[in-house]
Length: 337
Image (cartoon, rainbow, N blue to C red; front, side):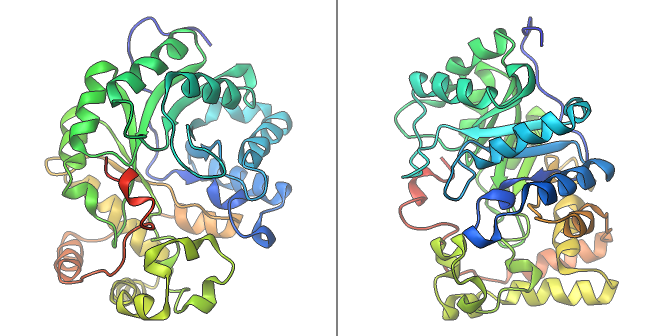
């Protein structure tokens, strides 16, 4: 890859992306076998998906497992690398999950990540969180030399609010911003992220667009997530909390039944519908993290909502109150920074 001569953004293509996390960062018995993971990635490509999201710490037992899967995938399917834009999160301690955005750790993280990729190059490097010690301007400046050296294509950010995005974008054009966004996590619409991204033409990559599976209707009690990493999150901490938040699932289910589609397809349609109103919203690209080809194809199948359906859903959503934080108490300081 040639080094960048002028600051640039990496284009984010497609209506839907693919989050690779659930392939390898889950309960041990649910880690997806490599060949099945490859089938799912190939299905995404066949469906026209071009944006993929990975992480340096996405692995149960072995934090590097997601990157190792990608390395093996490109060894088997080298012709597919050029079809994919891949963003990789880094700068998180795999044991404590605490962020460290120091210049030294940026160098260490990037050099480690690119070693798993053909040509020692990744499309997008993404600090998974800001560590509250290093200003975002310094973080971006520390990444730029790797862009100039042709090791990184562009910069993504995650879990940041509008002011932080704008400050970072003044230092170097931000290609995209990854935020949690779903029918029960709408903070990007109120924390300035949507407004700044819309103004600057920065796409918002929506992680956990299905509410970590909650919006699919498959989680009705803690018994349904026994042994899962979901037990780390406040909204799944007990049966009472799950029950108190279930109104949003009932809303999704109502529209799924009326349109004869799945809950997941309605939840994703709601996110994509924002793109019909560019005067109000940034471009939203959901990245559901499916673990098999069938589910992946379901997520990639476009379902449309009418303007009226969108308005009614939003009106009903505005009346719902959710109990519990998006993560756990110790993670909250690093959210919406």
